Image (cartoon, rainbow, N blue to C red):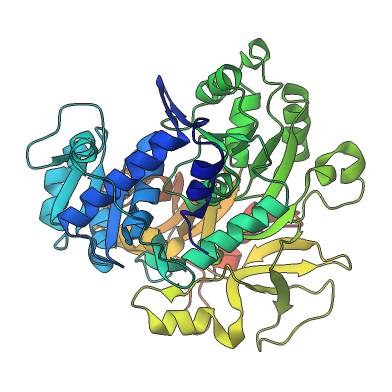
Length: 518
């Protein structure tokens, strides 16, 4: 199995049909294939060898799709960079897996000098945008124009396809290694669930560096769908793209769905082409389901639960369970059932399976489970012990195999669909000269599902405001990781062993709720 297979199929079956739409720019599959083969040739000329990592730091565009395909075609490995990260975080991800080549667009070109200074591995940068090419960078379109197309390297199966960075419990991101087979099998599982159905015109509004969108992309490539790309999510951008291009499917997090259907002009747009919206990151409230049903009466909602380490989909909740009739079955707040080729098992602290309905740790196995963490054999062994991926989420399954997530065993928050490891935020807070102790927790938030909340104890005689501490974090970590709220206390609750009792800190916020997470 190889990730360029869908492109080869489309080139044989429908070369003249539209493959990508970005602003006023359209490319057929024949044009896409030619550009990918030429860009792959440029990558090889620059020095990309089989297995070498190639990064991209950019907003969404048709060129981002070309980047994925061309790196695979050249035999390389993608390292898509989170656009919300600070320069320090980006440099870490580049150096950690020795990424020597980075593509940037106009939005991030101003960071080039700082990244070159911070990232020891970085040697070459390609300007993948429409503006003038900055000094010291190679021009994307010139490389494509100058190069002859090359043959597909056809790396496949267990060959490494990508290193996808996710937050870490130690305060440093971990590089999740996913193979061609991991990603291709997950894509085929989505196709089997009805996602990226024949005739799909898929809206790429979620960040293209993110594997949630990546899974949708791979399914669309496998089915030969048309990719409609907007630079980043805005409610108006989604509404305009659906009306103008007749989009049929999209991947959005619940916050994005809520913002779109609540837009004051939603009723002015023709949205009847939309058939499916896949969402994940958190459960969706019944109130938002009702509003989405009114604004998008033809749409079936599909929930996906997963994680980067599983390429990423683990379970699927089909549209029928989101309807008024389906909700009476009591499954709407579940994460759905194990997707095709995937197993889910709930275990206790000794890794023994627990009875149906009993809460334990959610584990999974199947062809989507990662090869491991880049250069982290001990963490890999812990996560994959016994042949099962241990998610760090607490949940149970009912008698029909529906998975209900009730808590997080790992110290992590999901806010607006993004994972935030508390250790990363605590490390940033601790660097403030006034901070003696701190603890970060997730608390309920109507807009984001959960928000990052900091509880801080100041050093004796030191002074700092909650707002000052939040601003301090923004200079060190990505904005979405920074606390949205903070409080100062005289002391933190501690166990007899001196460990902070975060359960005590979280208790008043989650009291009376069946789930301890959003």
